[in-house]
Length: 217
Image 1 (spheres, rainbow, N blue to C red):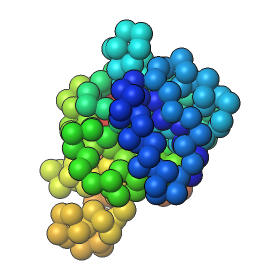
Image 2 (image 1 turned 45 degrees about the vertical axis):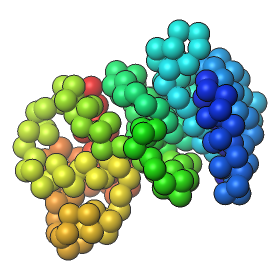
Image 3 (image 1 turned 120 degrees about the vertical axis):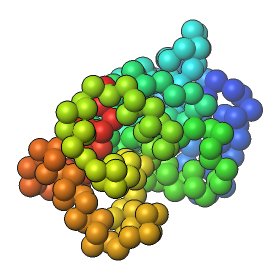
Image 4 (image 1 turned 180 degrees about the horizontal axis):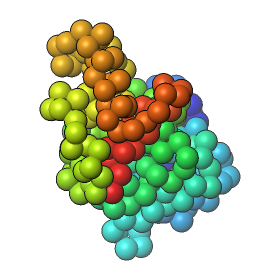
């Protein structure tokens, strides 16, 4: 797995580089600002990039804006936002930056990732075109969502299932988390697709569209 890291803290940047290298990953570049991030991705064409939100020069949302631009310019590159901040407006732009939507996108909060293996697993999932979203990010984006029409028809259990789908979990993992049978999860997912007006097509594609609908602002 080929990775580019964008983190303005030199200590965290070095730490991430060491951790990922120890796990057998290739860190092609580790940079400290958004402009250098875009240049590094153009040069190295990584499988995935790890991006902080607030970076030089303004320390507002430079990282997220650069990540959204990378998704448009290099749709095959996964983006894992790794920050202590939740920035909903540009996060929604990031999720909608390519036709694949949430596929190949992750958003994790630094203070909620306590296990290195969990982080590496999420990064691998995003690199492979999957999704990894922290529940707090999902909740915050739902609050600002303007797509309440279709979502309003979902039951509480269907919302729970959709939230776990947004985190990148399979039907089996969702069943374990909610302590229900996988067959029940499949029924809930089918109901979600129906209520959101997602016509039968490739199952993976419909999951991505459902998650994007859930997070869209």
